[in-house]
Length: 90
Image (tube, rainbow, N blue to C red; front, side):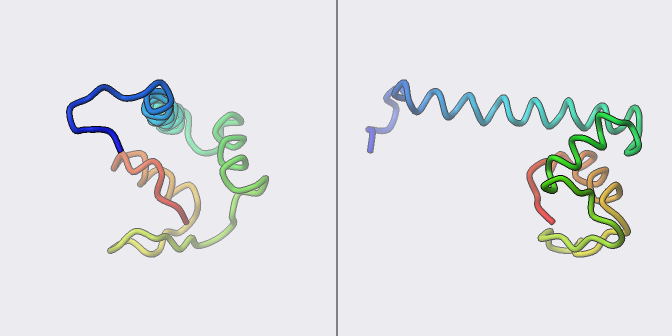
């Protein structure tokens, strides 16, 4: 382990900025979702990618305390976007 206050190694910087870029990409996808809706072809492709090729039909159960149930994947995704909880899984 590195001493507190020392700079990150090259490898640590790589992983640090990878995670920041992931959040930026998630925000961009959410903006597209909010502007164009869940039926937009790009949004549908992203949803399929997130779910191994198939957008779940029907109710969604989540790992979010207090919100274990959503009517469909679109409602779940919109909730994540509005709450900026991009990486919460179903």
